[in-house]
Image 1 (cartoon, rainbow, N blue to C red):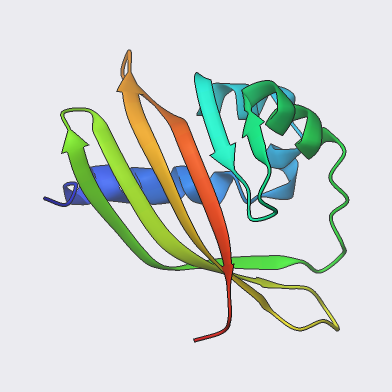
Image 2: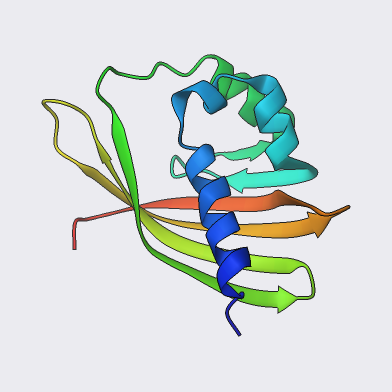
Length: 127
């Protein structure tokens, strides 16, 4: 069953926050969005924990005029307060070919706050 409209809208907004350069550079903002037990399977094939992601984002070089767009956003309730979200991202960098990826995240409601506990990105060819 998909999440209700308000939950789905909020989770999409949280995913979009994680794409914003000012949020990505803020260790506090990232700490607030990721659960302590967070793990990511990156599109590079590497596995990251919460602290590694925070460190990586602090050192991320964001090229000027980088834009990311979420499409095909969907939710699936796995259990009460646990939601899987899936979507596609197209990253546009001025002067370069767009990069497409499939994304999935698991969000868990903890003390009335949604926290991401898992994320995976997979590079794909344009479809």
